[in-house]
Length: 198
Image (cartoon, rainbow, N blue to C red):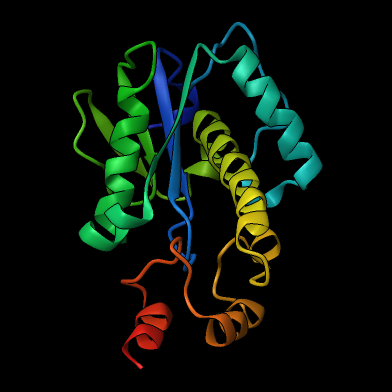
C-alpha cells in the first residue's frame, strides 16, 4: 500500500484504531478498533477532542449500533508500569483489533507506529482527523475512558479525577502531594514515582 494514497477511499473492511490515556498519571490506557459499514454512514465523525461531550456521547451509541464491528480494549495500570506506556498502548491496540468480530483487511493506526498485528496495518499521523474509522475509534475510546474516570472519582474522592481524567493538572498534582498515590496511579510516571521515593 502506498502511503501517499487517500485513505478516505479505502472502504473494504478497514479497521480504524486509536487510543486515549497515554498522558494521564492514573487509570488504564483505553483503545478501540472500529470497522465502519459504508452502507450505514455516521455523520459528524471527527477527532474526539474536537467534539463536545454531548456530541461524543451521542456518536458513541450510534457507532456501536451502526459499525460492522467494534471493540474497546485496554492495558491496566500494572501493565503500563511493567511494560512502559508505549508498549502497553501497543498491547491494548492489539487487543482491540483481535477483539473485532470481523477480521479487517487492513488496520489504520492513529499515530506514527503500529502494534504487531495478524493483519496488514499502516500508521496515519493525525488519523483521527483524516480517517472516519479512526475518528470513530477515538470517540469510543474517549467516552469509555471518561466514564471510567468518573466512576473512579467516587472510589477515590479528593483527586478530581472525574474532571481532569487523570491528566497532570495543577489540581491533580496538588491532591497527589496532599493525599498520596492511589492504587490506580501509574508508579512509573515521574510525578508519582517522585512522591513514592520521598
